[in-house]
Length: 415
Image (tube, rainbow, N blue to C red):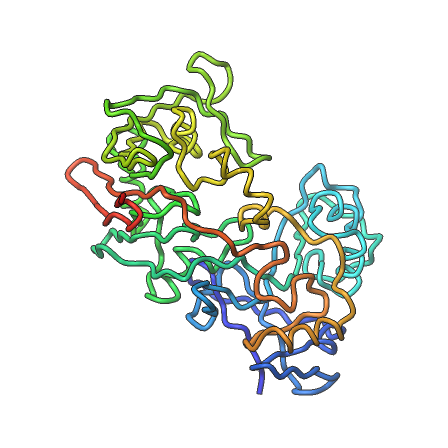
């Protein structure tokens, strides 16, 4: 009986099927409930691997739940790119080694030789020189970072709008290493809701109200209202210290550094960054921490988090912008944000070691790939599960003739 990985992604279209090169089929291990067997040459004739693309719909079977964490079963995925002008003239191996530094040079040599990297759907030699606009495919055994196993609670379901309470740690839509472990992916897998168009974004570690349009026309209406400044946004945060009793407005530019993945606040007249403004109102305090209503007037990356830091009252558990928490970050290890940017630098060790480790440490169904640098683990290498949701929660969005709200989280009550 053929073994197929079930699919995932966002919008459902026709699926893409691509056989695994025969050299790799002969060394494929299929793991089922702690038992692993090697597929020998010619065994189970006609068994092909399903190479997934963003066109494949998700399925509940794609997820594994373990100790309050939602994992994704590793799956085969085709990454597609087209040769840019500046890439032209490079060999296929040099192109990957220089532009995609996540894996070693030796890995890319092996990937080209066995057909894991192809050009225009064909295997090529390692010395092959690419030309502009050619299609490059990289077939990977993809491991997604896990997220906290909280339900995606549907708050309101209308003909053209869906509102949900987004759990912390779950990205809104596919990005970086995340594809199935996203709000959009989970809603499609567990509720058959698609297509969905997120109206606004919430950072991965932020929880609360998320509005999704159910068609492109409605999404465009929301977009126009947001761009016109007609939408009012409200969040709550738990911050360090006794926040001022009087309303506080922070006007400080936000300068985002994409390489570091963080923003800084600059004085309003600075040439750095973009103008940003946030209004803060204290809701309650116990002298040590405070619950604060946050109303961003502009929408910059990490704006609320940076403006609270700028005010001297950072979010109490913010590992990025609370200096006391930042010290602990190196001790606790890597969060999914960092592990998503750190890549594997060597090939998988001897396969017997992988096999033994898998049999000892796991009893879930998934394919163990001999070239994968993350197997036999479910999560990608470098991920540390010691992570919690940020104490920042979206509670309300309102615009012309509409208001959507979300319940407050448990942490919003001070003792």
